[in-house]
Each structure stands twice: as C-alpha cells, then as structure tokens.
Image 1 (cartoon, helix red, strand yellow):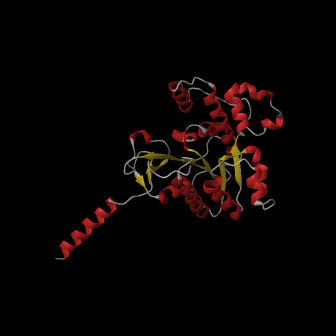
Image 2: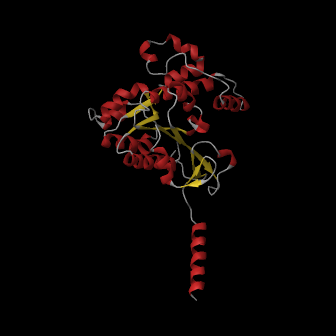
Image 3: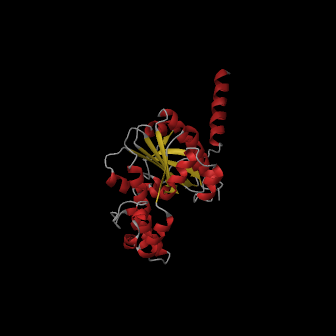
Length: 287
C-alpha cells in the first residue's frame, strides 16, 4: 500500500511540475539547464559581466535587479554598475544625484532618460544610490551616433575636443566583416535599406561602451554592464572592442532570448553567451 501511495505521489509531483508555467530558464552556452546560483557563481569571479537584455521584457529587468543584488552580496559590495541607457555626457548629473547633491526631480527632468526609465532602470539607480556604488554612463551621446549614421565616421573629426571626450578615441578600429555588423547590413539590405553607415553607428556605440568599461574593469571589482542583448550577443559588439582596449579581462556574458517553448534551448540560441536567459515569447511587454 505504501509503495502504491508513494508511486501516486511521484506521478502527482511530476504532473504538477509539467503543468507549471515558469517565467524563465537559464541555460549554459551549450544548451544545458543551469540554476540561478550557478550564474552568480560564474559572474562573481569575472572582471566584467554583460547582462544583455530585451529592452521591453519585464523578466529581463527583474533578473538584472536580482543578479545585481546577489552579486553585491557575493562580492561584499565590490561592484561597479554601468549601462547603455545612460550617455557619457550625463555622467556629471548622474554622479550629482547618486551623491545626494541634486534631487531626484532635477535628475529625472534634466538627464536624457529612456521612456521606460521609471519602471525598468530606476530600481538599479536607486540601488546604486542606497549602496553608494559607482554607476557609469557608458554610451556615446546619441547625437554623435546619429552623425555617424548620416555621414560616416569621418564627420566626427570636425567635432570639438570636448565632444570627442564623450566617445572612444578616434579613429575607432572598425571591421565590417565582424559578424554582428555584417549581419546587420545584410538584414537591412533585405528590407531595402543599403546604408553602410548603420553598422558604423552601432560600432561607435559599442566602441564607446567598451572604452568606458575599460577605464574601470580589472581593478578587483566586478563591473556589471546592462545593455541590449545584441550589443554583446555571440561575444561580439562591445566585447570585440573591449578585447582591443583592455585584453585579458575575464568576461561573462548573459544573452536574453524569447522562445515559444522554454524547456529546451533552440539551436539558433546556442553559444549566444556564457549563459542564455530564455523567456516565453508571449511574456507581457513593458512598452
């Protein structure tokens, strides 16, 4: 009788888990399921952690916050934060807010914040402020990326020295055959757009973020960087430049993807990062 009851309990448990609705799964780069703590353990021994997000995905933003809290504890507070969502010429106002020199209202009114800042990025800024952490505005001001998109790299040469201080040193190294840039050009061509400057605008963003990170990474603290997943997927983009500006860093990447079925990692998502965060495709979006 006991054996029968035990068997029924096992069947019930397996059925219950099978019918569960998990909001995410973590996978290793080769497609093996891993636990949250394994990601934390790998990241805490790195110099830089890239958390590649899907900008409008609530699970990605929640996971960024959870990882940041866990790594703060694991590293005894020895972390530095940085993000694509904050442009380098806003570093002063960001510092003033974190240091308590200006109000939240001043900061949010005067900084060029993303439309989803309050729901998706304010928690990270608030965490940095409370814990007295450095938060680096790593991205190039968008007006300069726009110049590259319209006129190419050469148009940056005529800018002032102050303007150039907000970007990676010119001329930036650029290889159009790097897969992420080559794929971007091919994708746009398939849609009828043939501008060779689009991947260049992406590259000046990647280069500036990498250069910003390089100034702080490798000093015994973990630099956690939040960016669109495409900027670090397949160990390219920002990583391609970071390996040029500061080779030898230990880097861990998390790529984020959406799949209809999250119980296995789709073939096309294997090796996108050291870890892949998989979220259901029908997940509610933040915008």
